[in-house]
Amino acid sequence: MDKGNGGGGGFFAGFLIGAVVGGAAAVLLAQEETRDRLAGKAREASNYAMGATDDLRGKVSDVTSQWQSSVSELYERGRQVVESARANIDAAVAEGRATAEQTRDDLQRKAEE
Image (cartoon, rainbow, N blue to C red; front, side, top):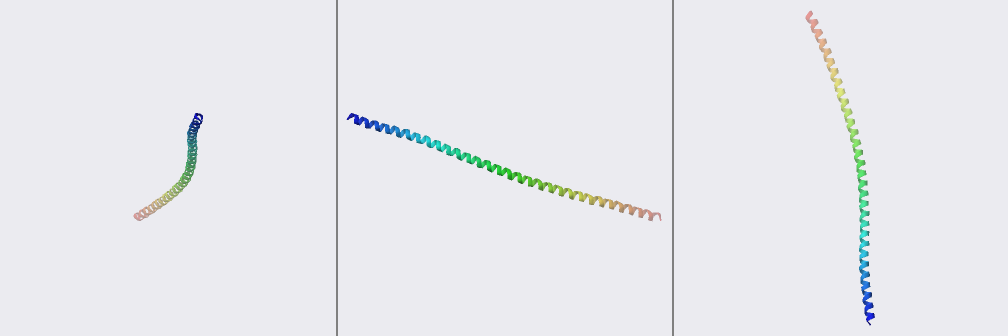
């Protein structure tokens, strides 16, 4: 009978050891799965961030190009306005000189008479 009781105790001890080893293996595997899942999610997040960064970079580039184009157009219009004003002022000065010379000549003729 001792053999029967000893065999049952051995079976129970083996069962417990197997349960502990199986539980430890399950925890280790679950942790590896969790690590793999987290690493996968981290890769997804990284890819998403890279894509968003590329999209943002493209949008900023487009806006910058449009802004530079607008600034160039405004500069050109401003330059044309200044040139037009300068031409008008030069014409007015030339007309004023001509009128002044005409008036001076008229006054000199009247003074000589």
